[in-house]
Length: 263
Image 1 (cartoon, helix red, strand yellow):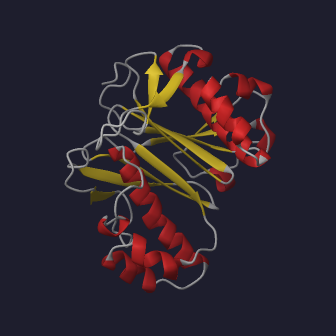
Image 2 (cartoon, helix red, strand yellow):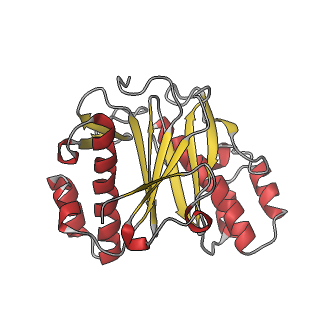
């Protein structure tokens, strides 16, 4: 359990992803992470990995009072099968760090930090084949709700609300998308926060609170924490001077704090 964060709301930082990365960002990555970057072909995909991992280290370094280069990230064992390095991301060094969750999609990334288990998922809104996806990923109640939403961008957004709620919960459990998503009910007709039951496995046998995060279009994001975690989460836009000054209409809603990175 974290020595840094008492029982307090989860914290979420989100940022826009640039198309390229800097040598200073790359220098913060571990050798294994740099190998992953070398194997990635797309320049934009490389930047997504580098900037997400580097910015997470900078945020965690500020929280834990250590230089970002000393933040060692890894993965916990899988909570279901016990396989090493198959579970959720963790801070391996320094000790006593809080739990974390990372997510990135086209143009955006997020880091969530909490004393207890936590999961965050962010997705870019885009055209989807919701008719094909529904049977394998939605519960009957979710499918019925989606059928009542106008086809097109509105239905795509409604589907991604279900998806991000599901993935946030399963990331908090520590398994990721490895189970039957059509068994996980996320109550899309109900504005968050919602209470979600993730299953009977000991790793999931607790209720979860899922909160819809207020990110600007074109992104949808959700956060999952153990039910009873104080709320609401504290959301911070960790901006970049490359994208110009913070604009509440573009970059967030009232209640979002702003932290600009150095130029």
